[in-house]
Length: 139
Length: 139
DNA sequence: CCGCATCCACTATGATACTG
DNA sequence: CAGTATCATAGTGGATGCGG
Image (cartoon, rainbow over all chains, first blue to last red; front, side):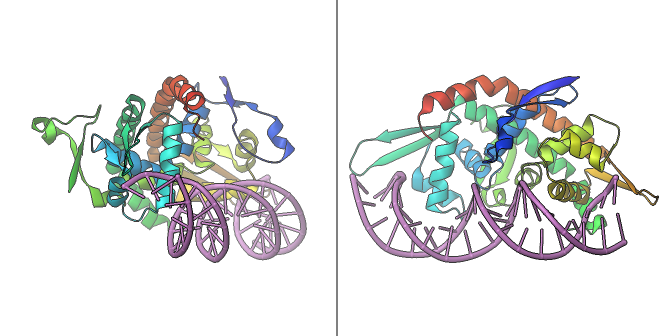
């Protein structure tokens, strides 16, 4: 079965002109997955969603304290990306002192569910993966 | 501090907490999900696994032709990483001309299943995500 | 034919200082 | 408090040539 998938590769090269590609895949649209993975596959999005899912809502610095090692900048960037895709809602209170709260949207909680499911699988397969890594010796 | 997350959805019910996944927050940093995501979340691993899953076995250049835009280097790197984690098996035929075939292991097919599940969800949510991106104005 | 090594561009990330 | 701006750095990915 042939599947035509969107190819959102951002190459400055003229090769990016071909925006649609046709790939023989067993009926699975590969690109949405890739697209989503590109969002949550970065260093901090996963952790951010997980932590947001663990509370009703969190303020910027609360979130920052809960995610060890994240910089102010990366938290800002990550939150904006997640908000841009509709996973996170941002509420600004025009007060003094300023207050901004973030919480998962329905879409974000749906994503959280997927991540947790993936987590279950990962935890399940971890021994096998670890074993393979030790065996292979490749790095 | 610990965080409980429902498998299916986000729940705060303490009584049902026994059946939920309880994860130490500090452990999020080293969470298996994050680890797996770091592997398949890169630019090519996902496509490679999907294409390998769509065939019994594939040779290096067959794979290369099926993945539009991948460079020789990245295919090599990706395949090595996947083989290192036991998702892909590499078979070298010491012939002339040389022949190397790759196929998914049981672990790899398990991963494929997860990716397909994630793909179903992604395809399902794609309209919502697209709508959010257009609406959001944030970039 | 397979794929490794080298060089190079780009991007993601991090540290720090400044602003509304 | 909640960012934004700027600079510095490391890792990723692409192009090309060589080796097995």
